[in-house]
Image (cartoon, rainbow over all chains, first blue to last red; front, side, top):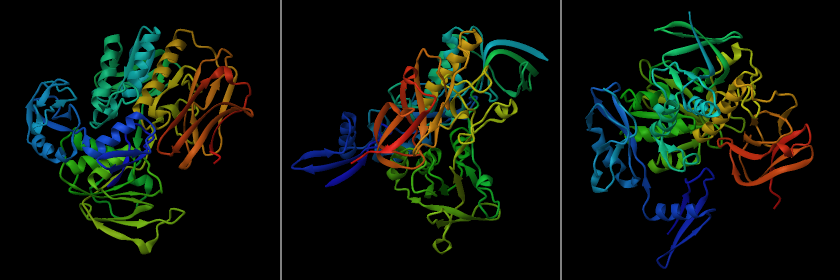
Length: 118
Length: 419
């Protein structure tokens, strides 16, 4: 199987070809080491940082922006969204507060990226 | 009327204004004041909840709120003062006039001024898309604000016109929130935004991207009911036989940004007809020597990391000017765009003879592969670098030392690499 991965590590955007031969990955088209890691991960197990918002009760704003502290497996993004959408937290919220612990048993937390005062 | 004095006055508390104010303080300006018309600081980054910021500046991937918070914290720690809910009305010769509903009119006397007002979006009316005027037509940034700050969903079936970054980012956001993005429609044969946004926002969710297409009609009485999409010919004229009507309830526009220069115009500061922002030299100094400018008010950037760097230079030089330490601009060289270069910023270089690093940002006119970027003084090449790919949607830059300049002719050109 061959897959073309467009590298998103930097703005150059190399088109990297990943091919599997005898249980080995053959990677071509990357211009740097970071591209090699990116293409390998993207081929074997793509992950993405998830960002969205969480409703806030009693704050100076009604939404707080959040992110997954680490990238989540790509196939879990929609399930994670379903959980986060139901959540309402109380103000105040500080940047870095963990709003969902270990989402979907990934070991990754959903943390606030903004601050909400009462 | 209230009278305020300061060393450096910064207009706008977005990423540009924050970085400029920090640099001004660090350069030794005692009183640095930011005037901001919004009720909070951070500018547009407050609604840019997505990641992708800081990869070059901090070498880590941050979201918009995290990125501006680092600058906001630093600015406040250094003692930068901020006037919120206050709108600058005029940059006069005797002072800057501003207005707030709490304090009324104020006049600010400043040693120097930094313009950091950012930009705004082009709208349906600037594109003159025919059709009725139902609700459901939004600029991508308005939709972003509604969804990310006001908890309002913009629609259930969405067409996006323009492959600008905000449009692609909203395509992902809308999809994650459970609505359907039917297509992103782009007039040109190249992407307006960054490749990584196409990959992570469109390809990841299998959202179709229709290149060389445009919206030719909007139908609907109260709410958008459909839009018509046509393929365009080589001159970007729609081909009527290719029309397809897509039933939808929402049309988002991500079709370009306009630097917000009403104050600059009014102050009779020279404006470039290409960037629509003030003409600046390497100090980010405008044609009025006590006024500096940085960020999207000068030219629309694709990465905030570049804005921060450029704004630090503006803030530093504005402080130097206020403290009487900036050399007067005497021998000024115009940087000329050569082959496949649309514009260069800064447009001018003050040649003081003592050198100093020059970092020229520029955009190409059309996409090209395997090129060599050259800076020439007269016929002599000062610096060159190779690029695998250049694209009008992705800003390029090249650095050299001002000492290398030996001729009044300075050109940047992009040449096809000889094979």
